[in-house]
Amino acid sequence: MSLQIEKISGQSGGGRACEVFTNRISLADGNLATIVSCILVKDAKSSDLQIFVRDIFEIFTKKIEGAQGGILDALRLAGDACREYIKTRNLDASFVHVLFYKNACYIARYGNEVKVWVYEPEKSEEITFEYGSGLPAFGQIYLVATNKFVSTFDIAAILQSADVDLGEVMDGLATDISAASDQSEIGAALIMVKGEKAKSEMFEAASETGKEEAAGGEPLPEGQEVKAGRGDEEIVSSKKDADYLEDKEKKSGIATAGVLLIKRELLRLKKGDIRAIFRLRRSLFILGLVIIIILGLSAFFKIGDARDKEKLAQFNSHLAAASTSYSEAGAIIDLNRVHARDILAKADGEIKLALALVPDDERAKKLASDISAKLKETESLTGVNFSEVANVDLSLVSLSSLGKGQLAGVGSGTIFKVDIKSKSVDKINSVEGAKAGLVFDSGAFILSGGNVFKVDIGSGKQEKVIEGQDGSDLAVFLGNVYILSQSGINKFVPVDKGYTQSENYLERAQSFSESSHFAIDGSIWVTDGSQILKYTRGKRDEFTISGLGGSNSQFGEIYTDANLDNLYVVDVANSALLVIGKDGVYKKAYQSPDFGKASALVVDEGAGKMYVSVDNKILEAEL
Image 1 (tube, rainbow, N blue to C red):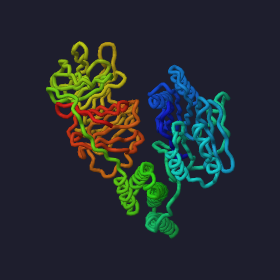
Image 2: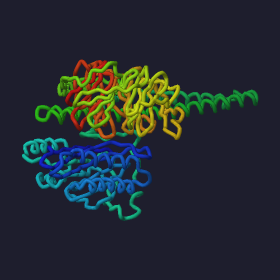
Image 3: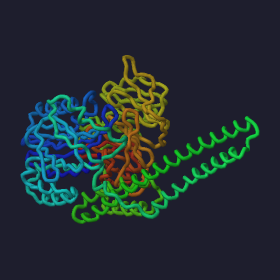
Image 4: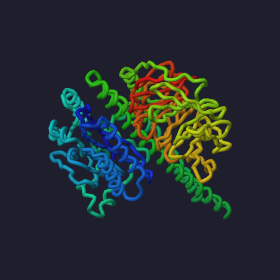
């Protein structure tokens, strides 16, 4: 099963905010799942509505990711956590979370302002239960939308047609919504089920027992991505493809030679060319060995041919999806540049998958070049003008946010506590020779001389907490200390009298570059040359960057946390700060010569600010 997902939402305002989210997550059992959420919050007195909306989505996502046991129980637990958050803040909110897991669909609803409809040719059905599940059918379209969207746009007839194009539907809606004077309650997601035809079953409410197993289905293949655009269309194989397969089939001629060899040996025996019992035994042994070899070769070539055909089919599928998305983007690039870039990013991801299978295919290489050129044409590049927040005595190796408008910079022998508004600087004696550092829970963790020291920010008290562990970067998450080195990532867990012995976090050995850095949000994100590596529970996840033209990047500092949807990555080679979604889609770039010299980075999305340390200066700029 694969999914095409299109989403749209209007501008917040007037005490109302609506957003539509999608995310690909890894559950506790190691399987992947896709979440699509539509959340509407109303509160005329609050200016934090966008934060409330994101918090509701993050709460649901984190609860689902960490849940143990049955998926319906996890769905109810995550939904109830969202309800509790809404009630404790006295919010007027509604949400629908749709979770696609294995080959089933799970739904959690709250409130009356967001609806779920399922459309098939000539029929439709509204889902009204609070918790439940069902098996999606091939060609079904799920509409998750606010009441305002449903009452404003009558698209039921379009969604019930057999040949609906979701991309075209969303392009038309985008134009209408942009012209609307009040967009604040408009939000919708369209999800089309693609791939193999699934058995269609009615949805069942979670209160009915015994349905979870029936809705489970088979798990998605490891690493399968949610597809967008018309990715299931197929390009007819060229003559080059046919010749390729024909060449492989000719190799089966070895089997024919083997048959002739057997025939020759049998004729010798029939003519009486056997003078002794030992000659007979030797001949039988030789014939048996030849038969075994031929059978083995026959099986080998059959398996090889099957694999080649499957590989070619996958290649054509990715090439078709890339070509279709490229054409779609070209058709709307002058009307909706932002949406066109999103489609181009999907095309870029598909063509990279195609070239990974057949690197020398000229059609794929030409299409990859065309997509890269269009991405460059639509690239959002913003110049940055930094202002100085503080000028301290030493070069800084790290920068951390203390909250409440304060930053902490770590230098050799000193920690600098900086008030952003007043630009005042307080000094705290620290450890000499600091290579990396991070402030966590009122303590600064400093990596120096192969040891880790903890310095109390308030009292200045120092203690050595980890010995004999060198590296290039350090991070702290949920109290655990992580150290990045060129040979891997080591994890240290706090115990009664310090920390446990070094534990290799990675399941498999991995080497990193000398300039690698990392950030943690539950998963660990590591920069390594021109790529970003993602690890969850020690296992490397599939993660590629789409929409970024060219390959001359050299990534250094990286910043994110569990509350952010984006990765902020310094591209040292191009003196730029890249904004990349956690789904791998490159969004925009900020450019300044200072990024090429930055030693640390902090981003405050809530305040709309970025901070970098360059030598002994802390600089500030608008996002």
